[in-house]
Image (cartoon, rainbow, N blue to C red; front, side):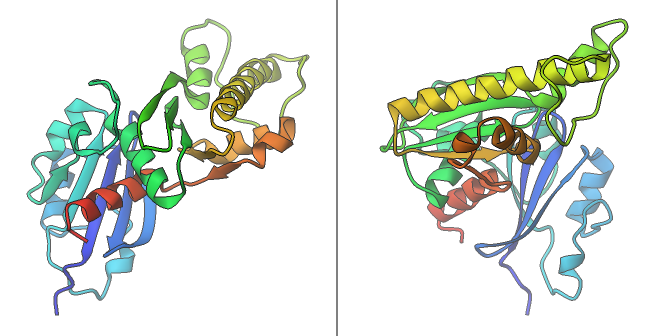
Length: 261
């Protein structure tokens, strides 16, 4: 029997594609890839999975093209994926978040919806991707506000690209000294301590407004940022949960709302 419950979720970020495979409401796996070429999208539609790590489907009798639910912050990529024949693009006006503004990123709103369904309200979502974003909801699932700044990796990249003698450095596994004695650690110190102090400030301000709020950290740099926060502000880090799949819980919430589960 053909398994019609298998479907794909795709969140197109500023730098990469973020994927999840579901069987009904069960999230089987999630992974990241580089952007795909148009030819690869057509192969995916025809059932060729060479560009995706979908070994989990070996032996499954499923119909293709798999249903694909997409949220995107990159218009050119959204247009490219419109060629996929079984796609549902999730837009901001389909997300039941109240008090929004028209240019709020649908990915931010969808991650907030996923947070609502998985945890509780009020809630603050910190997405540590190419951009670092703060997105907050009150107890009525109304948008309170947020902030956007360059993410951790992007700050290192920008300093490397826009200066003559400062090369890109890797993210250290442990915090560097505050007052460094070499260029590499000076870059690490300047970016990391400034960033985590900013995160601390935003979280503490939010918790003053909503003392019983959940705080969720997601995105590609979530683990290293949480480690830095735990080293510098352990009491605050205890209040933060990490969830890689937050936006996928939002896509799952969308499907439930559409009676597609």
